[in-house]
Image 1 (cartoon, one colour):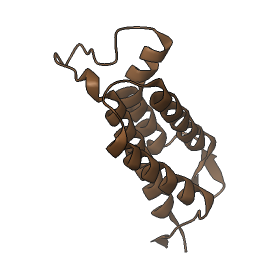
Image 2 (cartoon, helix red, strand yellow):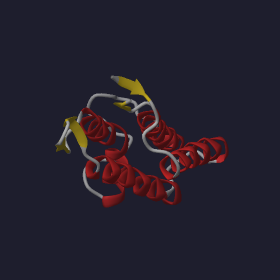
Image 3 (cartoon, rainbow, N blue to C red):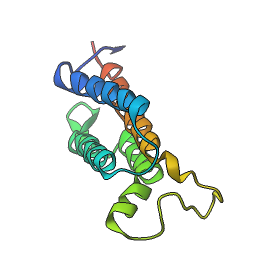
Length: 137
């Protein structure tokens, strides 16, 4: 029988709540534009979440664990969609973060707010994943 129960408590939940609270608070006070003091810590937090997802394993059947899961695919897609343009800007490869082949008018002044909302969304996804992870009862 599977029930929706929190299997992990403590540090992951506190860290997720701290990331969500900090990013949403900073969202209200940050200036428009692209600031490295916001983007670099945010990318470090993203890499931390990626490491957490790829280092944890999922038990498919009792005794069989795999590292590939739907959450890992979502994290990679989320990173490419929301964080890769800022990573390219920091590394100096490719075009600017606000330029896209598909979107003609990028909003270059909203980078700080966009990346803060993106990390809040990623932390909320991890928070929900930890709280609502099924386990045998």
